[in-house]
Length: 330
Image 1: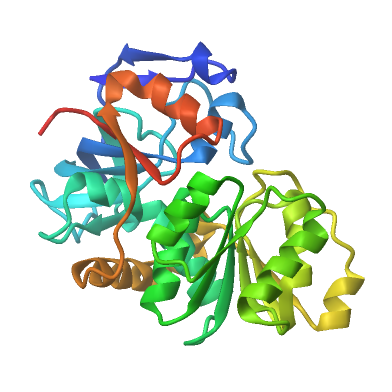
Image 2 (image 1 turned 180 degrees about the horizontal axis):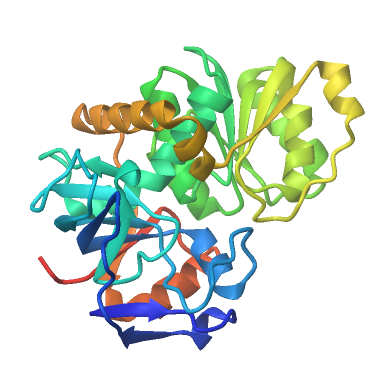
C-alpha cells in the first residue's frame, strides 16, 4: 500500500509517498481501508517536529480518515468488517490503510459520504467541544471566532448559528471574510487592521454593542488573543484552541478586572478523560448535518499522490475551509 512516510523530522517537501507494508491490527483496534483523508494544520507541524506530539520515526502523519473496516482485533465489540466509519487517529492517516482504536471510530450514517466525513470530523468536533463544553455556550449568546475562515473557524460559525447564537467571524483578508459571511456569520471583523488591541475591540463593539461578546473561540493566539480579551463582555469566556500566530503574552490582571475565564481545548485528551463528550459531539454533528444546519466547506479535493501540494498550501495558511485527499480505492 502507499503511505506518506516521515523518516526524520524536516520540511514538508522533504518527505515522500512510498510503498509500505500494510499495518497489522492489534487488540482493541480496527483496520480501515481508507477512502478519504482530511488535512489539518497540525499535520504540517508534526512532520517538522514542531508539534507537541512527536512520534517515533518512521511514522505516517494524518488524523482524519474515513473508509470501510476490513479487519478487527480481539475485544472489538462495536464494529465488524464491512462497516463504514470515520476515525480520528493520533497519526497514520496519510495512507491507503490505517489502524484505529475502536474508541476513536464513529459509525458513518448513510447520509454522510466518505469525503464529507473526513472533511468534518476533527474540525467540527473541535469547534463543538470548544463551544459547548469548554465555552459553556448558552442559547442566544454572542461568540467571536478568530481565524474564522479556517476549517475550525467555519465549523464554529455554522454550529453557533445552528444553536441560535450570534456569530462574529474575524479574518485577515476581504476574500476570507466574504467566505465567513457566506457560511452564516452575522458580522465579520478585519484582523489585518493596525493596532489589533484597539481595532478588534472597536469593530466588535460596533457589531454587537459595547457590552462585547460572551465567548471567544481562539485557534490563532499571539497578539490576537490579547486583543480578543478586550472585546469580551464582563464574565466572558475565551477558549484557547491553537497558536498559529504564536503563544500569547496577556497579563493576568485583565482577567481579574473583567472577571474573565480562560479554558484550554485539546481534543485528543477528551477521548481519554471525557469520552461521553466525544460521543455526544459526534451524534449532534451528524444530526445537524442531516438537518442541513451545517455543511463543511471542502475547498480542495485531490488524489493522495498530490499530497505535497495540498499539505504545503495548508501549512502556508492559504486554504480557506477544508482540504481532503482521496485514495481512489472506492
